Image (cartoon, rainbow, N blue to C red; front, side, top):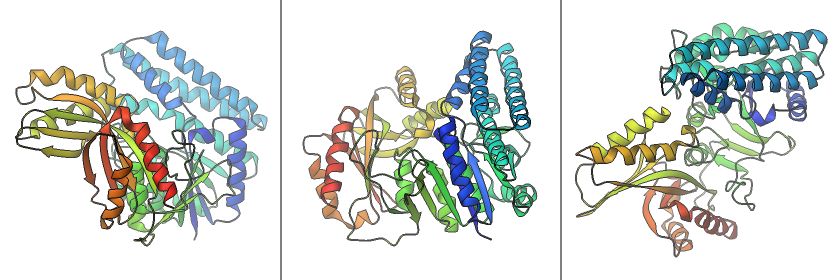
Length: 469
């Protein structure tokens, strides 16, 4: 049976206009697929608000977290009031909103009574998934109003993960067994499940989250476990782009990409997709489409097992923040690497990725990539903690920290085109290059530069991409 998994982001469900568009897409695809699975994110900004509320609760600030929950309640109830729902559906939905938010208030109250400086990761994961739960119930109610049998389901009951709170990894065998028992029967009855993205649970039932942007990862896992035909990610852009359209107006849609190319693009900073979602799809050869929810007639980007084209042009350029560490000495780098890893993991539940390491007779330079899933403040927080702790460790004294950018160009078999690599570097004339790294996936070249030069480097390389097409 052909099965389609569709994921809708927070901007797709945040107001009546967007929800009307989502409803139109689902009703159209419902007629063309035997089984339809929807994954929904929280409304824009809700997860960040819940994280802030958790921090306020942990500090014992009762008024602060109550104010945030009151604002979220007002926002969701106002949205429900605007929707074309029957009185029965609206009343049930309003009751769901109140119940879910009151449950979270109880958790925050418990946290506030045991106040400390930082909320424990497991307590944070237990609270921030409520945004997805609210969104799924809204979408499912709208579908039922249109005559489509639909049910909201929490993936805490379906996706079983490890206990790395804040950045958990699904256990596919356990998840597949749970899905076979609890989700497949729903699909066989021609019911459309609307599932929470971003969240799962440990085998013992403790809630976990899959990292920022984890709803994409949820869709990928569900696709594998249900043997889906395709996965569609609906966003507010026209597909995967040659550059971030928020930074470069000239960015163009990429019609096709290989799994490796899109995985590298996501890993090195493209915010459209969660970097970890690609591996399961690649392993099971499930095609992925990235489409614009407001322009459903456009094809978007198809990601599949694309045959490499040695003569092809560069696909994209992206940039991601990192930290550069240097010392006027050489020798073992394990102590500094371990310290960076400890600091980043304690702050964000993300391990540090060593992007680049280089040593000469009397100098050492390391570059650590900070994943976008670590959050917008990760670089600043990690740098501040490092500068505070470096001087007090004998093995790490003497190292200095600087913010850097990792600018990456993407194309399959890039490692087989040294002339193309040389031309990319030529475009950066006048920009100091701190390091170069050829990706082991054979489709990326990363250039480490001072963060102040990021915008200029992106413009120069993207212009080269367009002119060489």
